[in-house]
Structure formats: C-alpha cells, structure tokens
Image 1 (cartoon, rainbow, N blue to C red):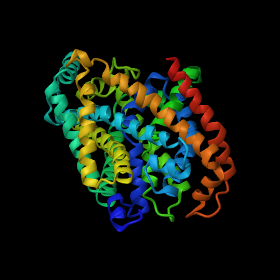
Image 2 (image 1 turned 90 degrees about the horizontal axis):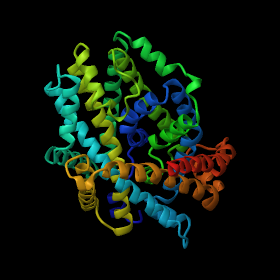
Image 3 (image 1 turned 180 degrees about the vertical axis):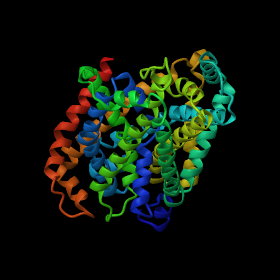
Length: 448
C-alpha cells in the first residue's frame, strides 16, 4: 500500500455498503442454501436452529470481529497480517495455513458449484419434468460420473469467478456483490412465498420452527455450533483479507453484526423455502441428507404447480450463493500473491484460478468417473472444509487473544465508532469462550 501502483493493484472498498454486501456474499454460499437445511433436517429441525442462532452470535461474531481487526490494522493478506503484528515469530505460518486452506477448499467447492450450473440448465430445459424418482436419481448419478460435463461445469464456474476477481475490489468483487446479493435475496423470498402456499406447509413449518428439545443431544449441539462457524467463512483468511481493504471510518463491530445477521437470515429463509415443500409431497422426509438438493428437490418440483419454474429459480439461487463465496476464496490467494510476490491482479487471478481448477480435477472425477480418485471430494471436504477451517479459527482466536492482545484489537475496533462498551466482554469471549468451543468442535471432528 506504499505506492499508488500498489494501491491500484490491491484495491479498496468504494463504500461501506459494498464491503458489507461482499462479506455477506463470502459468508453466504452452498452452506446456507444446501448444508443448513440438510443439517437441520437430520437434527430434528427447531432444536438445531435454536442452537445455531446462539452459536452464531456467541462464537461467530466475536471471531469475525477479530479477523476484521487484524485485516484492517495491517492492510495485508493473512500471511502478511500475522507477520506484521508478530514480526520474527512463526505466526506467519498460521496465515500461510489459512491461505492454503482457502485454495484447497475452492478446488472442490468449484466442482459442486459446477453442479448447480448444470442443474440450472436441467431445470430450465424441463428435462426432469414428469420424470420418476428413479429417473431423477439416475440423471444425477450419470452426470457426476461423466468426466466431460463435470469438468466442463467446473471449468465454467472457475472462469466466471476468475473474471470477477480480475476486475478488482470496486469494479469486480464489490460491483458483483451489489448485483448478486439483492438478486439472491429476492429469489429466495419468492421461493419462500411459493413454498408457504403449498398444501401441507403448516406441518413443515412446525417441524422447522418448533424446537423438540428431546432431539437436543451433544451431537446436535456440536453440529449446530460447527455449522454456524463454517457458515460465516471464518478461519480461512477471507474475512482478514476483506477487512484489509477497509478504511478507518468503517465500523467493524456493526459490520460483523450485520454480516452475521444477514448470513443467518439467508439460511433461515432457505429452511422456510425447503421444509414446507418437503412436507407437501407424501413420502418425502426432511432427513434425506446431501441428496436433498439434487435428487429430492426435483421430485418436489415435479409434484407442484409451475414446479419447473420453481426449480429453475432455486438452482439459479444456489449458483449465485456458490459464486459469492467462491469469489472471496479466490481473493484470499490473489491478495497473497499481490502482497507477498508482487504480482499484478490480472496475472494473479488467472494463474491462481488455473491452479485451483487443476487441483479440483480429482474431486470432479472422484464420484465414479475415475476409480483412482474415488472419495477425493469427501476427503478434501472433511479435512480442509472441516478440520482446516476449525483449526484456522482457533489460531485466529489464540493470536488475537494471547499474542497480539485484546487491548490492541479493541483499539482497532473502536476506530470509526468510538468507545466499544462491550470490549471487555468481547475480550473474554475471544480469549476463553471461543477457543474452548472451537477446541471442542475440533476434538469431536478428530474423534470421528
């Protein structure tokens, strides 16, 4: 940031609204539209949702504030940020781990996101209209086992993501967020309205909104806390990176709260769109698991009036959600190459995006197309999308709470807003509560 050229290459947010929408886009992704309803359906509905709300604001918001403070104070990517605040120490490795985690996650995330592009086309074409459940399942299985279409969709999704990130902060990421996020919200609201007018919707609402505390065991609690954490894109350097483009005038505390509220709202609305629809079709259950989106939902669309339009809108929504998160993941690595290697943005976006595409090939071909790569996507998701993010967030909490110091962090959080009256409470959460909660999640993931 020391030279005009560096500022041009690195970029900055043009407005506070653009920043909030971009971070909301980073947080909102397949986890909100796909994973949240799946987890809630398998965990009893309302009880899971209640714990998820508590975890979002007790753990998610404090860690997000910590990441934003680190990013804005240093104006650097995760590696440069840790090195700047703890020179001569090994903490730069924690930043490197975050960057590497984001790179690997995007390599398989792009594969699944490519499926949403394919299913948007399938829904628009009406090729599943009137198909039997067996035919719908066969369509999905045949698609993910066919190398050409799977790799083509993976490539197309990465090309779209690269093109947006090449545009920079204001003219690429911020401009895309200002368009995509309102579109996503409007589409989701339309789906909710349609779902709530279906026969049997009341039963779905009861399952989703009325907590059954008999379902509330340790496993459900841990799943809800874990999902709240994953949903906010914490632990992989995205929030640090986005925070590094902020001006001192931006209120970090209110930004973290607004982003967390928006993230929860989108996930909550996704549940409102899906569960009433599930209960409107006899024989379908809310605990269908990961196949809920690509196998179960097309059956629902076939069973309701104007279902093909309903389905097309849903998969457009899913593709937009995937894109907004992918943009932030690519930007983490691009910011690293700009800051630490001196590359320009265009070269960085193309080079990094190409590497990510190549790294994603085993995940794309590991669902039946090439036996050698079998299970790759699940493996990478578990160890990087699961444990990698948890470990990254633990390192952020420990660094801010015990190395950099909560006093320095609070000072940064007070820039642009005045006195942070809950600074001591936040400091206690980031030093003790958040690390303990994250360690518990990590322990459970390691167990199995």
